[in-house]
Structures are given as C-alpha cells and as structure tokens.
Length: 168
Image (cartoon, rainbow, N blue to C red; front, top):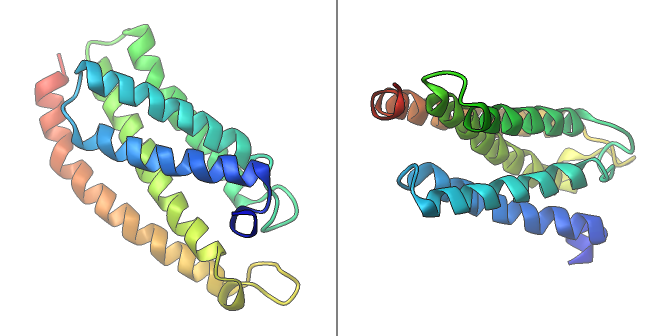
C-alpha cells in the first residue's frame, strides 16, 4: 500500500477517507435523528478529523502548502458549522442548519475523492518535475463540477423535506 499512499500518514489518510466516504453516504441516505444516525454521524466526524489532520501532513503533490490544504480548512469549518447548531441549539431551526452543513461536508468529501483520483494519474496530469499541469486542474475541475451538480440537485430536492420535517 506504500506506493499508493506514500507512507504511514498516507495510509491513515486513505483508510480514514474510505471510512468517511462510506459513513457520510450512510448518514445522508439514512433516517435522521435515530440512534444509529447519531452513532454513524459521530464516526463520520471522527474519520473526517483524521482525514483533515493527516491532509496537513501530506505534501506529495505540491511539496508545500497547496490548494488541497485550503480545502481541508474549509472542510474543518464545514464540520464545525454542522456540529455547532446541535451543541448550541440557539435557533429553532438548528437541525436544518446541521443538515445543511453536514450535507455539504459529505459532498465536499466526494469532490476531494475526484481530486485525489486525478492526482493519481501521473503520466497524464503531472509535469516531468512532478508538479501538476493544466490537464490536472481541468480534470479536477470537471470532476468536482460533476459531483457538485449531482450534490446540488439532491440538495434542492431534499432541503424542503428537511425544512418541513425538522424545521420548527
């Protein structure tokens, strides 16, 4: 697995990412508010903490702090924004806020999957120096856009249902 992940940190990142992808998908499609939803949701958050922490230890693609590190910061902010309404319960619609932010956390994770997949195509997307070329950015942009379009379509479909069911 070392040639896929690079090192032990990469292995943790990969395994936590796979867990987060599965757990996040389950949380999105399962019944909300159940004991199972909460348990799987906490496992998702834990896996995302590992994904984001290890992301800050990986510099294979750029050799320095890069665009994916900025997206890890956004991911952390989205998770915090999704948990805060549950903890504070300051508004009557706190569950709707929770669903909205956690939904986008999972969609962002699937966008990251697209970017990671394309970063593994070195003959196509990397220069001889190992740096990403324009094809890389086009592939990542198109892949991310496809995921976002699918995510937005599901969001527009389910947001009114969430608001009616969980808004107060």
